[in-house]
Amino acid sequence: MGKVLIIGAGGVGAVVTHKCAQVPEVFTDILLASRTKSKCDKIAAEVGGNRIQTAQVDADNVEELVALISSFQPEVVINVALPYQDLTIMEACLRTKVHYLDTANYEPKDVAKFEYHWQWAFQDRFKEAGILGLLGCGFDPGVSGIFTAHALKHHFDEIHYLDIIDCNAGDHGKAFATNFNPEINIREITQKGKYWQQGDWIEIEPLSIHQPIDYPGIGPKESYLLYHEELESLVKNIPHMKRARFWMTFSQNYINHLRVLENVGMTSIKPIKFQGQEIVPLEFLKAVLPEPSSLGEGYSGQTSIGCQIKGLKNGKEKTYYVWNNCDHAAVYKEIKAQAVSYTTGVPAMIGAMMILTGQWSGRGVFNVEDFDPDPFMKALPKHGLPWHEAVDQPLAFSDYQL
Image 1 (cartoon, rainbow, N blue to C red):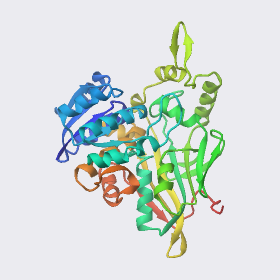
Image 2 (image 1 turned 180 degrees about the vertical axis):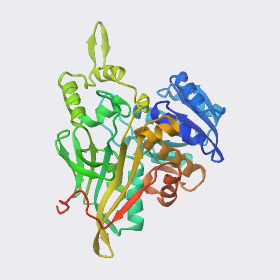
Image 3 (image 1 turned 180 degrees about the horizontal axis):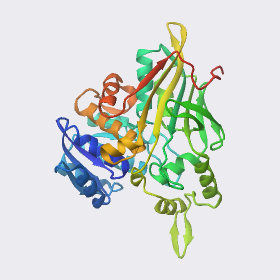
Image 4 (image 1 turned 30 degrees about the vertical axis):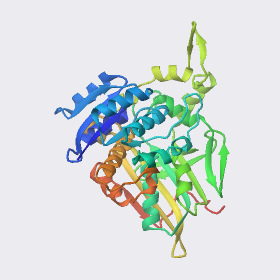
């Protein structure tokens, strides 16, 4: 049905490639490109069957990207490179008039700050070019927004309270490791938290608000309030929202390691001089930590990610909880990955499928909640991410009154 170019050969890129290859009736030709072609070749060999072409490209270089896109002529580009590279890839898609999809919003390399406004600014140019830019189509952001849109369409007239809860209860056996790019992960966690309440953003110190949440099939896990990018789009696109928050679990071991690394300056993004060279401490730390794509073998336990929602239906209060649990060992058995990469990569593939099949269409830049959630929700269990729901059951939070 269409050609797809996947940019990025990390853990998520490997999952996207495997999952696209499983749907040949939609993804007729697949090109995987990265700065390091050997990584692409390794993934292609794992997929097998000569399904995957590979190429080298510098995703910071617009001209290289344009040349690659022009040569391969895909219908859609799936960007699972670094968030720093979103704007260059979007620019290349504009010049070649090719649809664009990513899983994480742009952030500048020299400031730990991630917001959608840089990408939303492409709206008029994408519309004029007649192409669709789909932002944040992983799990969170991504499925979290689709879950919320599904809830609004089928269960609520008004959504007032939204809590996105994200638990990784897996054990990879490492002393300290991050489940996706260490540099991006640590930048995200160490910046100040933020949540939406009564029309304003409330800022808090990093990891200063936390509480145990009981996750289905897992049990209680300490969960920390963070800022996460889908909150920005959801409070903009979902009317009547009084409060929106995001929670993520971390073990005490993880928190202890992180605090020590912060205290000695290893999480800093400010360049320092070392033996006559300028280095960024966090980039050095990334180089010595385990590669996230290497964590799959022996990884046990599950992830659980979902949305707990309270609002009104026919003038009456209603609660709704929708979630997915994903098993690390099952993912490794299927495609030799781990569940955090899988829960990001599968939705990216489904988003590209929505575009190629015409189930989602438009001109301009969109977030996932702008579209009909039904075909996406139908596709999730078919491609490995079954979802569950509970209606009018007690939620994790009792403090819904502001």
